[in-house]
Image (tube, rainbow, N blue to C red; front, side):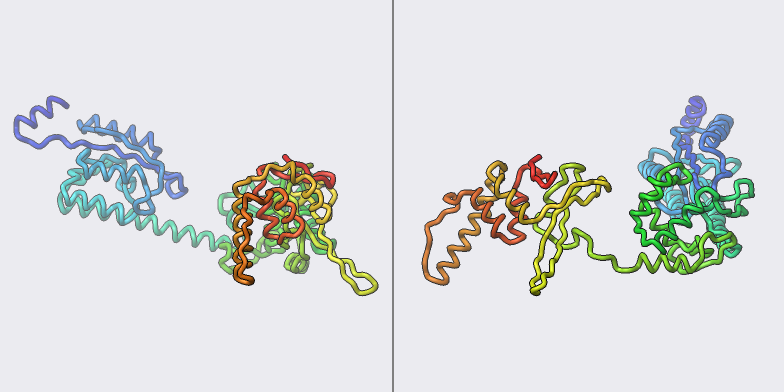
Length: 436
């Protein structure tokens, strides 16, 4: 190689081409038949050795070439060519470089600028002349055409499969694929292990008013239901099952396309049962605890399980026509569905807060600033109404006495603002507040 370079220099010939060996293979199904990256490199290095080709660097990439400008290694290669690091490319075939018009155009443009002197593939050479560049563009366009045809053929195949009654993709819980059938011809059969419990889940919602969480407990804890991968079923999966028409013999494909097909498999429930379940789940739920913004929600935690504390209101109608409203705070059971912590009335909660407010470390800076603003507002009110000015200063007000006053007489927002100034978390356990 060195001798050849010296001869070329003596004879005034141009310097040898510095090639970058580029090897690419996509993990997508349309390129499963292409040589592996290691095989491409081996074949091209053997050719380079036989033909005294100067391979300056080897670059490899596992990425699809369908879309323009999406391959980081290839993009860097083009940048390096523009900078003069290489002036030749060595690859297995033209479709390793490009399967789209954008990347193909970038290559030809670099050849027009004289940045690329030659592109070598297995058995072909493309130099910077009109005929060879034209051939390169034809082969690159052919690769794009094949790529486009594959996309159309795949969609046609999926549509044909749907028309036969088989939904593309894995079978849902309650069904299993025929393992021994050819690809694309695999039928779906009822799973004897899981289908009965799926049917039971629909029936429990339709006739016994089970909620999603009730089913979650029933399937995982009582029946020890497991997915095909041996995992517990999630709450979101339960709701997806209850909303899937696949189980009564129809399916939508693609999802949210509005195109429904009649299944070629045996349904495990009736359409009437499915519609009854959808009707049950679509009924507006009763108001649950936490849907109203109470003063102390999201500020307290359960001392037993660590869940948040929510609140709900209840009304008592007396015979004389009076109505009394009561607010109760209790654990959300978010971390432990079986938490047994009792509820506490809001009045008892406030009384406890007033009692231990002296023990709480309050952020005095924030609270004093709040008091200062309240006093300034009060002074402004007195001046506007009566023309009087007061000499009260924010520093003269006892912070903790002000906190007690807010807990007893303040608005809901004032109470929330106060508790947000606490430096310690507050827990509720056995109807008693503690500081964490």
